[in-house]
Image 1 (cartoon, protein in one colour):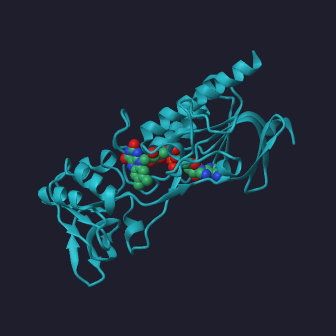
Image 2 (cartoon, rainbow, N blue to C red; image 1 turned 180 degrees about the horizontal axis):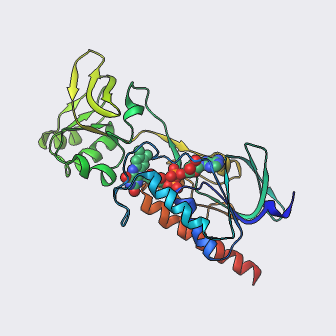
Image 3 (cartoon, rainbow, N blue to C red; image 1 turned 45 degrees about the horizontal axis):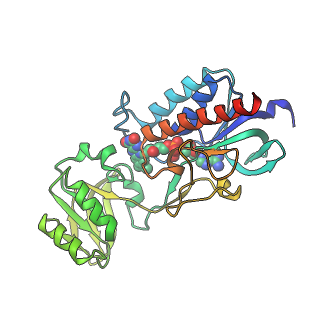
Amino acid sequence: MTDKNSFEVIIVGGSYSGLSAGMALGRALRNVLIIDGGQPCNIQTPHSHNFITQDGKTPKELSTLARQQVEEYPTITFYDGLATNAKKISNGFEITTEKGDVFTARKLIFATGVRDIMPKIKGFAACWGISVIHCPYCHGYEVRNERTGIFANGDFAFHYAQLIRNWTKDLTLFTNGESTLNQAQIDKVTKHHIPIVQKKIAAFEHHNGNIRQIVFTDNSTFQLKAIYARPHFEQHCKIPKALGCELTEQGLLKVDVFQKTTVDGIFACGDNASPFRAVSNAVATGTIAGAAINNKITEEEF
Ligand SMILES: Cc1cc2nc3c(=O)[nH]c(=O)nc-3n(C[C@H](O)[C@H](O)[C@H](O)COP(=O)(O)OP(=O)(O)OC[C@H]3O[C@@H](n4cnc5c(N)ncnc54)[C@H](O)[C@@H]3O)c2cc1C
């Protein structure tokens, strides 16, 4: 392996969080490699909201500008592709890519995000991020006061019913099977005129991702404009776990306030380590991870 394959820091994941960490490290004159597979979780959403100065831009506009700005720092190198393996070596870590390239670094940052697992309902995946909404702060304003659904059950359905009522009063809860809300929750939801529909869903009928109606397995339908859902997710990248990084009960990488994981020398930032999924949070935690790693290296070298 040549010196050109050796870095002070490798950042796996070059979306909002990884680029933000990269900017902090580039400005700290660190020799950094950013490896990115180019598959951010918001890839399908037409517009990104609630990030100050960038409200309403497309996700791609945000990441393109971010990358251009990070590319201005000469100590940053970009590698487009997937990191597939990693191992601990005496003075840090070794990362192998899908194409078989091998890189080493003293420290690692994982800014790899999470992968949403689409329920097996026809049309769901096509509507994801367009009219099937994960977060009211990101997209609720655009469908305020519209006829809206919540696709959820149990405690989460109750929480979302409570929350989304702020954006629209024309709200219906779809539990897709028997409701698991407790009686107190049902009483409250009913008091606020939010019907609970327990019928099994067959499909989300849509036009270019814009939902028209829900079709139930009994062939009845329900027209609506938008529907909130929080599908299950998994870590987008399995490498941190393979290196021994602990996960929380929710399946997020366990980090401290400086974004340090439970493995020395490995940091994580953005969606893979935070339940609050927002570009602003990904950027903020990336900045913290970058600064924290730089601080650690300066301490070690001083
Ligand atoms: C549908 C949808 C709409 C959203 N809308 C908004 C919005 O309007 N406003 C807002 O603030 N937030 C929004 N969010 C949340 C926001 O997109 C995320 O919080 C943000 O993208 C997280 O950034 P990240 O860098 O942590 O991860 P991501 O943006 O998901 O990027 C992770 C990157 O890591 C790469 N990667 C993963 N594994 C590897 C590997 N092994 N090797 C190399 N690269 C790898 C991926 O390819 C990807 O490029 C939305 C999310 C979704 C799902």
